[in-house]
Length: 453
Image (cartoon, rainbow, N blue to C red; front, side):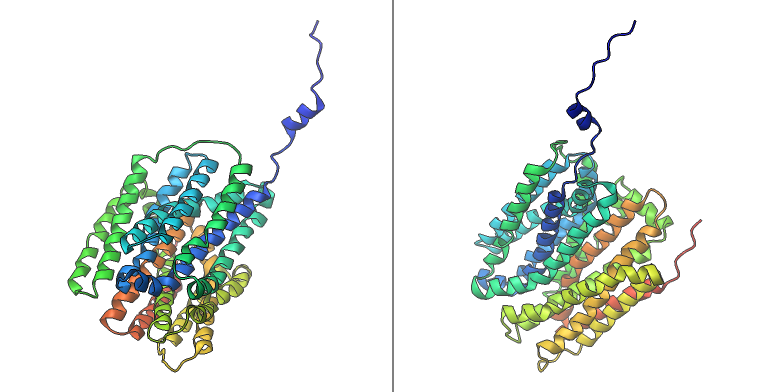
């Protein structure tokens, strides 16, 4: 005789079989964080002249308000991904958003340049965690069949931050000063933190990063810092470039460690080295041009922050508009021809800026910037697809992170290269270097990919 079967209450049965609900509010939070991250990267470069004046330091020191943010971002991007695989998304997000906002407030309060640089270095570390978590938050908050739609939210709001950053920064600089540039991000950070705190699942907990992650970050950070310091100090005396020499052995040592071995194997067997190098060159060329033009417009030409911002706005506008068609063209023509075309258009736009003349007005500069930005928009998505499609099975995440690392490293190195070149020669020489870097990206993408077996 069997025991009587007790019916399961209907509400309990529903709870047992019902799928996890889609949390679109968390997708919105990922979009807000993407917006504020891109806003930060664009708005601070515009404020460097005002920071140098306000804190009574040379332009080379003020430049570290931007470089100090990029340095830990580059150094921690891959180690942060390894650490985040072992901790909960919710506590990591709350820590990163809170730390990012606190560092923004500390930067706004900075009485000295070294205070500001320290705040930006710490903020860059929190930003590395945010950059890794943003796509994870968007992808895991909805069902798999809706992930494409969810990923489009941060992919759209990120460029929107790039577009609005120069305009918002110009208005803030003209009416409230450079400190407001750091404070404007606080409301967005607060909104994202409240959303995550209320709606994110309470899973996982924070753990300290492992020794391997800390060692990888130290090696990458030391290599990048050596190069940036050498380039920044070289205008005072060329022998400072010797500081960059330890970078190569540090990178080689990292590639032999557990954190670097997957990337080393991918570059060796996946045929993605040329693609990653093209991403680095194109990003460095763009960053060098952007930095030099902002300094020229605000400095020798004496343009207001708002007028400079409206001129510089042409680049992200061209990038956003063309980026909408990059994926479609890649599906029709192929990823490599589309990426190659985009790099060539960017190189052409930057080359047309080399003869920069004092008689050029804003629109004459803007259409050249828009052309370069359109090329970047065409290149970005297809290049990412090119690198990931060439990766061996099981290495997609490594290939994607390698592209992101190359792009971030290019953004960090570009302004330092421009500063060293312009100080040694002229601003036109720095713009010529930016165009040459973009042309190098074209050459790298034009190479026939190796045949893999």
